[in-house]
Amino acid sequence: MVSADPMVTANQMIKLTRIELTLFFFLFCALALTFGGHGASVDENLIIQVLDSFVERGELTVTKMFQALPGPDEKYYSRYGFGFPLVLLPFYLLGSLLEAVAGKHDLFYRDPHFFMLLWGQVFFTAATGWVLYRVCRELGGSVKVAVALSLGLIFGTTFWPYSQALYRLTFSALMLLLVLRAGLVYLRSNRGGALVAIVLLEGFGLNVREDLAIAFLGIGLYLAARASWRGRLLLLSAFFLGAMLGFCLWLGHNYLRFGTVWIENYADLAFHESWLISMPAMLYGKKFGLLWYSPILLFFPLAFSACRKSGMVPLWILGLYIFMAYFCLYASSTFYHGGQCFGPRHMYFILPFVLLPLIPYFETASKRLWGAWWALVAVGMLFNAPGLYAHHGKYESFFDAPPFWDLLWTYPQHPYVLLWDELDFWWFRTLCLHPLSLWPLLFLALVALTAYCGFRLWQAVFQSTETGNSPHA
Image 1 (spheres, rainbow, N blue to C red):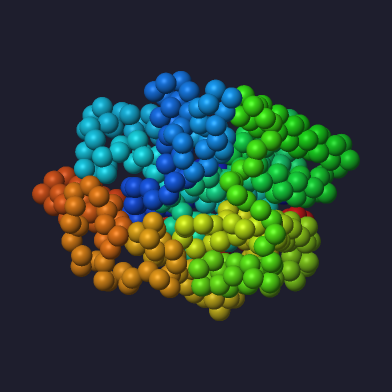
Image 2: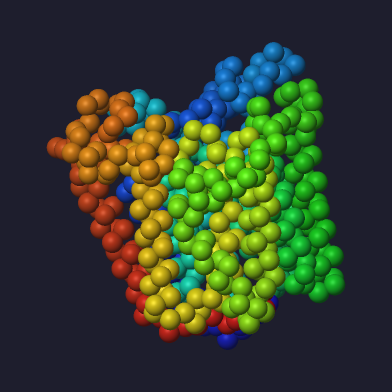
């Protein structure tokens, strides 16, 4: 357990805060450079309809569409619940403000609400990287390792392309990390507020995705194993209360909207798929293979020895449990492929827990090992890049997407509709269609800010001589 150091100076705290802010702004700005600005799936359309209905009419109704069910009032409602639309509400209101100022302009694909909601997904992705950094620090990782794992997660895995799509999975990862961090804070400080945070975060998280219960169970047992008898009782009580709160809200929502407490999250979802077919496809298949799109997973089995030497085997077991639980669950489902999407959609949100056991592995890593890490991050970036630059409503993998350079020389042919074979970068379209405006200057400012944050981050990481404090995690 990491203990609080009373001798930490104010200057050290300010320095740590600056590193965190620099990391967050670098992640946000870098993701903003590859911003898409439009949706491409029916799931995203369902979320925007829920928000439209709530803000404009005070309801939660949607049109008759995929993943919508009729209620007792014969109106249709979303199967996905209220959690994710609720956290997106501030960004929807920003979209209303944008519409009031600029109208339904071509720049925003004539849908300023959807445009701002997608900026919310960029924010959540950057926040996930930042919270992973905080968790690494709570577990005793050095600044260098914490930053490396954060950058590897966001840019070396499917988190990168899904920063531009309005799915619930990225926010689900953020909720899991926040619960873990709240538990670690409790272990370090015995603060009752951390237990309250666990209850509220878990309760809300279960209304973002019900299957987060699997991960919450593992996190609760991991934290309880590290606590004293009194702390163990309080932690397990907090996780139990959070689960009860979450499921009561979920079941209550179902009863009010659909007239029944139990509904399936996905229509036509069954769990009878053969693992002989689905598991290889999910692990190394061309479209869904995690090892293609998140190759840094290869380090996870190698980290066991380092975890054993540093007393962090429980953390490694937690990562293994979460990975295998969801891997087996989705591999047995008829939706193991994730539907019409880019790469391995269903599994990417649990990747932070596969990376956390790498903390002791990289604390004493050689330059060669660090070189291997950044090489695999680069491979992940290569395979995930088509999910950014190629229209993810048509191209669903690295292997069927056109080369970047073929799209780069294709000038946008429509002011507000992205054609299938155009470069799917909002900034590229904006600069091509509005070259004599302020947008080129704003783009250069964003590039400069990204470069500045990246340079300061590089200074903080590679000029730091700090090492981790080897907690027994």
